[in-house]
Length: 239
Image 1 (cartoon, rainbow, N blue to C red):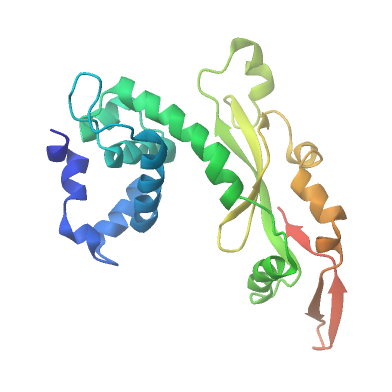
Image 2: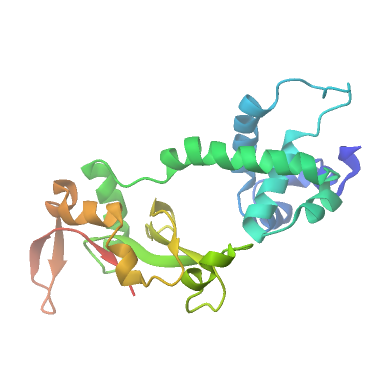
């Protein structure tokens, strides 16, 4: 009975429907996603994941709502299948299949829709004006390389993946706006590669350097005396 599981009871709690409630804040912290966005993603997942109300043996299917929670817990906190089973009663084999399917669908459908560079002057201005409001006019993003631990690293790649972190990693060059929204994520590189080398292969950075949308963008700056002037060409903030 999935309804009496820890997560099943949480989803039935009326407090979860109240905007700004403490339970919603806990939900956001534990699953790394706001509750309304979670509901949208559940409906999206049901569109390609739910075919019948029962499985091949006639038993009730595992609720998609709990499967999606399991995915978020694993992706957001590196939880294992056993942890998900304890909290939702969904066995590891069932969760494993959903995890792979959700990951592929998210990469193919959600990623291109939500993680993308500005394509119009209006979209670029929306990002730039947030930086201008805090005294950094002309910035169109903040960039850094993020290292993700590579579990079960193949033995032949341990040397090229083990860098400053001291354990095997894959490195991803990420650009986000001032609200923390990712607008570009480069495919992974080996953990031993430094940031200066990785950025040379980033198509998003090359686009900012060469695309007229970015190179011809004008913004206002002021000197120490308060004199205003126009500058051209946006840039990224890096460490």
